[in-house]
Image (cartoon, rainbow, N blue to C red):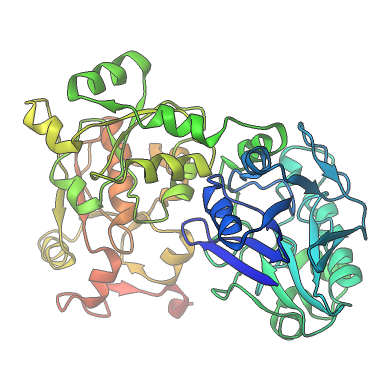
Length: 472
């Protein structure tokens, strides 16, 4: 028997490959399915099942392509109503894979179709529980997503279902079972997830706040406390996972069209495509195509795309470092952005060498920021980190306009003022500045080493930034 966790850091997502005696199952696969097929071929195994724990909101699953390419049966738990052929399993149903079995355990709460899968080994021992978004390491799934699609499913009702599922279905299982969740720290599907990606059920009973002794009312209050609004693309991804989508092969073929600078410019003008520059922030600052926005491929790329590009149907043109174009298109497709129509052949250098117009961003260090603050105590500083980061520590007098919600708060930034913009290390501030520049803002200066640079700089002292909690 083989259990392999396939963890994708960008999405903080765990898919699982299980193999026994020539048969395999894949749980919650990503959009690009060839790696799973390759694993099965290497093991001489046939993929029998694609097991889905629920209709995912934060990424587009690869269930349809994987089933089509392998003949595997797609399995959902009770109450699921997909718009394609699938096996809707009964609560307690047993699926056989080689010498092992998988028990379907219906655990509504995160969503109504949410299901865990209990693996029993060849000796009859319960070994692993694949919990999807029902139970994380240190947390449980947020119960406010399904209400975006079904209005009478309030977050309070879902949280109540989750309480019952955890206590009646999960917690009675053997303590030595290994819990394998669908996500870890960094995912927006929970609020308090651990960096660990697996744990024993016994340890979760000891350490996970949601599994402690409490009433249902107390549980509902704790689970709902502190939930931030989910990213806008979540409901769109749910619909794609329910209704179906284009094959990843079709998306890649369309997105990997090589365009000369002239063709790229024509496509941008004729299609109203968004020009997405995925190079590092420091490289982008030195020169870029006017009105392009920067979301670096080496950061939390896919979730930031989902947060910053409101329409998943948006037509997109790519500027990327040479050789990374397929990676960009693939990672866009993971979160449902399927309308990439090509990339700039030769990258930004080709654009610049063709003599076309370019733009740049003024970029300074934290040391230089300190010098400017000394000369001008009223310097306008924008902190684009999350509110929680800002409340923990921030530069005195800085305004907080989180990148996460830039589209809701852009009116708070004046085109008539000059701002020094920072995040933690420079990734988010450049994305923020690029979006504002594309909307006509010109007086923006990037602090390229961000608040991390402020804390390291000898030109700042403890009185130059503050933790508000110490002032209470």
